[in-house]
Image 1 (tube, rainbow, N blue to C red):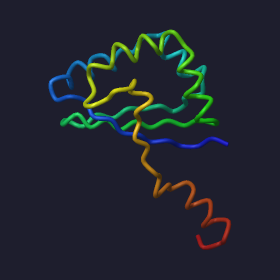
Image 2 (image 1 turned 90 degrees about the vertical axis):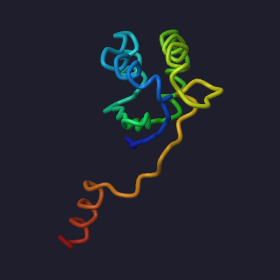
Image 3 (image 1 turned 30 degrees about the vertical axis):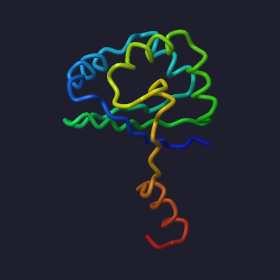
Length: 118
């Protein structure tokens, strides 16, 4: 069953513009690897102060993470991105601070329709 995941990271203030530029044209082999390993509907949002919020959907989080960890392109990407983040001693994709979902419109509408309250 597909699950939604949201995470946060922090980009160094003097790296924000380079982070934007890099993510405007992610390497095609990285894009393909993400899709092939089950990272679906993946988006990254960046606040002006460097707060990164990422969102993706996966049928199996562990398989998606392990699948990417096994790719050569991910090793290159993580190395290229490492300097951009605040206080990370592991690759960024291993340092995600996952945020719990507290509201989802579709889920609540589905429950409301099932109980006849809508």
